[in-house]
Amino acid sequence: MKETVLNKFEEVFGDVEGVKVFFAPGRVNLIGEHTDYNGGHVFPCALTIGTYGAARVRQDKKLRFYSMNFEQLGVIESSLEDMKPEKEADWTNYPKGVMWAFEKKGFQIPKGMDILLNGNIPNGSGLSSSASVEVLTGYILREFFGFDVSNQDLALIGQYSENNFNGVNCGIMDQFAIAMGKKEHAIFLDTADLSYTYAPVKLKGAKLVIACSNKKRGLGDSKYNERRSECETALAELQKVADIKGLGDLTEEQFEEYKTAIADPVRIKRAKHAVYENQRTVKAVAALQADDIAEFGRLMNASHVSLRDDYEVTGIELDTLVEEAWKVEGVIGSRMTGAGFGGCTVSLVQDEAIDRFIDQVGKAYLAKIGYAADFYVVEIGDGPCTL
Ligand code: GLA
Figure (cartoon, protein in one colour):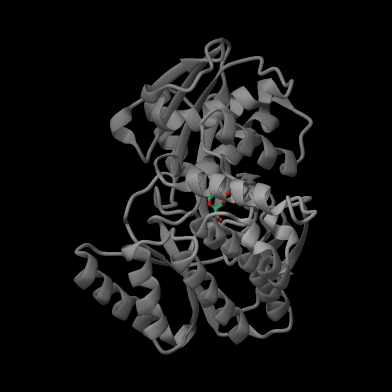
């Protein structure tokens, strides 16, 4: 891949003088969905697929971007002197947003750059291709300009740029999982205070399989921000009767006791998901640590049901993938992952069942939805690096 991006860089930008090549992973969340903006726990991991970037510093303030994933867009240019989100800037609003965020945080970017990207994360799949680009950009800036920022800072700056430059009110999970990724480990992160531990993911005879619905979605045009504000309203209502900072502070029992403080039945369902999903995540990590993979799988399934019925972020594509997965012998657990409304599912599948899983779920999906899903057997990888 290094050679591929270098060759393309030379073709697009003329030469490879001063170019370095970098990588940032994608991520998949194993459990703990829509909890990260509610002060709850998440349990994501970085993947070995991700975004490759070749970059160099220019002598002026110009920015030139090229993506091998959007070749039809050609070279997209802008300037460090004119940093605002623009529709025509398309995907480059992500790296530009990160540069803007560094400047907002007091890091002066002295010179422009030529940047070429090539990702092998399916676009719009819900495996965080945008957060991968954000963390990669931050990593590149740190490498070239020596900014004194930790990987955790790269995650926070990425999230800040997405919230304030790109207008998506995402939580910290994606950027954190990518910036802090560790091979063969998932990250048990408490989003209330960013404390975290790495948990080894030893699946013994099973693998993680991603099924991509191929229903395209972008967080910006999804109901993501709407769900977030429903939770905020429910929290404000609960705060009248309980001394809490986030929905993640409540146990299931406490929620049942206080829930009548929420005036609207839909908001009760939204908040219920956030509370129960957080508790499920804590239980799931304990199950994994106790080597109880079957229990981990059951909690994954329960997570999907809650996202389908209470949080209502699944849709027919994700429901079909998951419900068909549940029918396959050898599937330990299956759920949608990421924001929802399209994107992909994550399943824990026994090795011997993987071919059957892909065949059965793939056929049923095609028959019901009318177009094919894609399947990826994935591995848990490290965070960003220089190649
Ligand atoms: C998206 C957001 C994350 C998180 C998930 C849902 O991936 O970027 O912050 O909220 O949705 O769990």
